[in-house]
Image (cartoon, rainbow, N blue to C red; front, side, top):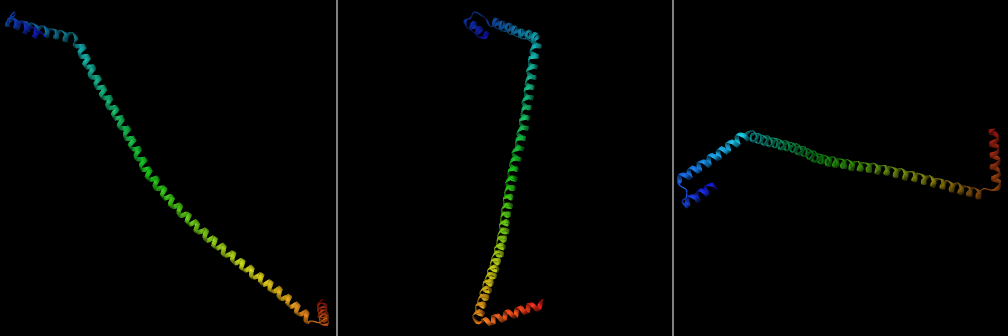
Length: 177
């Protein structure tokens, strides 16, 4: 802004080039003196400000790195858990398949044993029923034969023959005593 004013004054012809140089020199000297005085009196505050700013920046950087490390550790922990879950899933599915196959084999074996047991039981039952039927037929045949023999003997035998057999049996039993 000073240069603009000086340039306007020089353009109007009211100020000479030497005066412009002197004014610029004085203004520059004033400016550098002001900056120097400010720096001298405020150097501790400025130094403390920039030092504090640097330490704040370093602290923020360290905190960011700490947060980054924590986040990385959490990510690794989560990744490990994911891998465990995935491997656990595969292992669980494999175990489930093996258990299912084992159960299937046990069911088949149990069914085979039951079938053999039922077959044996059915064979034994049928043999028993056949034997009982044969025995019943024999008993019926024997009863029929005895009844037929009695009828035949009674029809052929006379009363006198019957009395002779009874006497003979009585004498046989009496001799046994």
